[in-house]
Image (cartoon, rainbow, N blue to C red; front, side, top):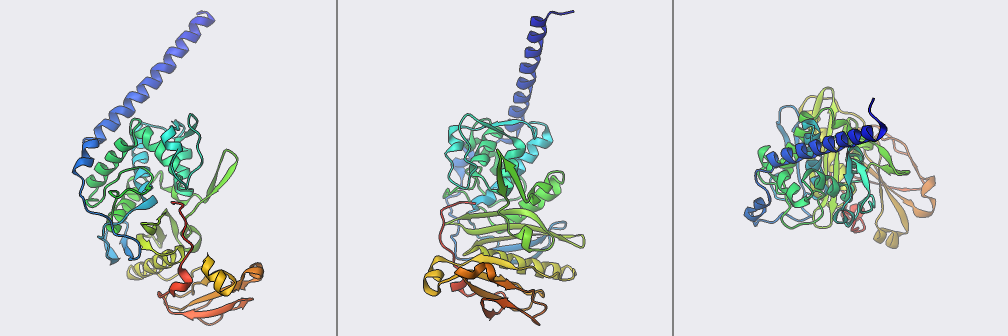
Length: 386
């Protein structure tokens, strides 16, 4: 029987050999994908994305690719954190190939730790698992976790990973998309279109059904902290089960949503909205019309709640803007401004095809769908990127 030192030596040799084999497999996989490496950036188009203020949108049938509605879907836009959808696609692809595993440690570099919010606050030299990184992307849209994941798959280089993302996007038909980083933090050359993102959404669903469930994660715990999902559509739209929000000041409010009703799955994209409320309402309206076009019966919408802007508080001293979407997709919206000091006393009953609305401690205004008065949907500017 071998003595203990000899056993330890054999065990250590096996561990190092296994780790080395996995590293070589990851590098080989990355090399195959990165047929165009950093040189891809030197040939990038000099075109610039469109800015916030003009909405681009599209709704597709996820199964057939049929376009059910669209508004300027081919304008080149800044993707913001919708970029992370491609980061996740690359991650799922690496998992499928066996190049990485869900339990594998992801090292946190100094570069990753310096990413701007939204972030987990990862410390250089620490680690998180691939699965924790995936959860951080789909819930908090953590830029530091996205960068760390990109560096892992990109052989230690986020620019290399971005080149791989771009090549994969073009192979999928996303011809107007260019990636510069894994997170979606601002870069003047990083751009896409609503049509390209709808294509990406469809491929995520079709190519990786075993991982798609992550997009519906309501929250997860990381080092004792509760991390909720940023995506409001999971709560306010019947059938919605993913995918991702995105925001930068330059891009505006972006959203990709997939929803399933009566075995019909749609993928919708809204880019450049001026507020979270407008973004959600435009998405809900477009998905409703998409399901209508597919012959799916309408479903009642729950309440949509949004914070009032600071300018509204200053002008009217009212603390909340409560938007109650009518049950019927064509009914008007009921908007109530509740006093800030008594916001917790405000209550709203469901609107049933416009027949009844009860609002306690609030003033009610009726407006037509889908128009929303600008003074009611403009939000305080924030520098957080999601």
